[in-house]
Length: 312
Image 1: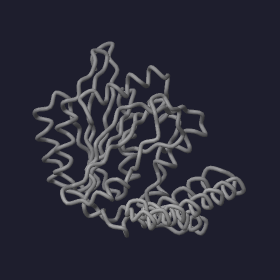
Image 2: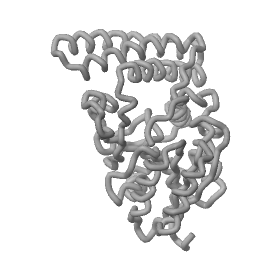
Image 3: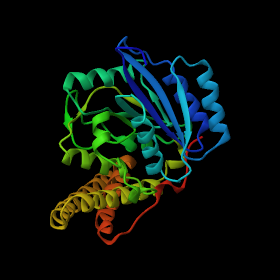
């Protein structure tokens, strides 16, 4: 590492998506950093796929930003995320940025913007939003629904964030160990659980306008997929709070949230029917399923969303 520069590692978890991974790595290789910033890229392959290794090798040959390839044989997004953290902590890097393999930065200053705003806000964690675009043939209602309208504005301090566009300072990961909980190995919500632990530890997270673009796969654009996702998210919410709070606090919090989700689900469904708006109706069904998942989480029910790989 150059003397006087700060190293930041951009981490990518991938599983059988070599085409989309190549698109992302090409975009990351064009990131522009300031004189005081040095970037490197880490790819953790959770499928141990020769085609993926070949893509990384080809990009690394021409990239001005070095790319490291590692495999994680233990299946599940949690093991892969923790592999990223372990590698990161074994280096001199001071910031770890997560981005998904179905995404790419909105511009060439994306990483530097996150780093600069971390310093500006004296933040422990920085995040931004995701802009979804549909894979060819994806219905518009599904693209509109996946993230909805971004409610955050520059400088908002937040307590909920996810690893699809996230910068984490080194001292956070040195304290929160293991960063991601294997009890969420195939179910999702390990990043929500991580955010909850960080908030309870007193770490401060801020939002800035540094979006990434995501290609939403056509194979996910079904009502069934959204309903399952809603159910899974509800389960993850309840399990996270049961793991980190007293039973009485978690019970009260999750029952209140279940009530909110039930009420909103009914209202959105009715609104969708009256206005003949499919996006609003499915949003209501999503929230109603999230209500069901919030209750199911109390009984140890799990839904393994990551058994099926979407994309290419």
